Length: 68
Image (cartoon, rainbow, N blue to C red; front, side, top):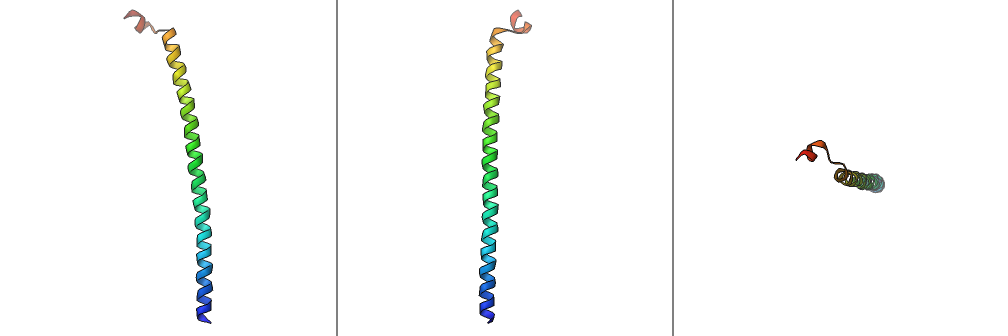
């Protein structure tokens, strides 16, 4: 009787632990994917801004660049 209770307790505890671990793992993986996607989007926006600044810098030189 005691062995049966111990067996069921161990089985229930391990199934519950596995379920919690799976939920935590899935949540962390989704968070990692979201951060990665967000960083790619922000770097793409930054790259387009830098490209725009570089292209506009050649057309309109600042007064310090025009004197030299």
